[in-house]
Image 1 (spheres, rainbow, N blue to C red):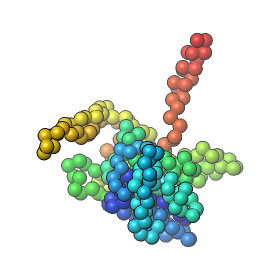
Image 2: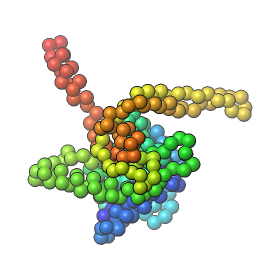
Image 3: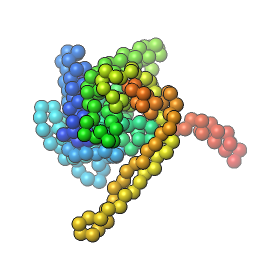
Length: 271
């Protein structure tokens, strides 16, 4: 089994080490296992699925099958699959992100974008994120992802193969290959289980612009979210993580609003 590990927090991020440990646990169950790490040389949070098209991509080898890329998370996956690895990986792990990627967050997330790039290439890809409370940023519970990560991915892969087999022969090509996994903010033994969820939506989400003044008297700005959610539906990712459940959300690349497509097609038929 060949596993590619990447992230958006950078090559030195502690969550990347956690993802490597998860990958090694999965790889140790297979013969001729390889774990490759190809990650941004610096943090790329919020990069979404951007590509470095107007500047060159720099690549530095920092260990055996371990590379730092001066580029985005999507760049990293492309460089790994199209340039570095002699054969494509069997699965891709992106993360473990420092903080949740749920609800409206997912369109900004570089963690999810790297997994998206893998899914486009036909590789089962997993975005992994560890939730934590902002007031406990110095004590992120990485052990939750570390202990539950491999078994969660193993269960998803088994269920996916079962679904593909039941879909017919040959297996259905549209079986989901992109999964967003969020581990709750609690002790590892306090996790109440795993739940398949849909993407939730926050009751309030406002992007704030905070202005500050540097030592030379010039203004600069920080972007930050003010987030609030009151009562998320029980089938959503928000509900799961707030209730100490591991949230697994199957995602798709096609963003077409099928209901609107049908309504507008009918409304515009005679125009």
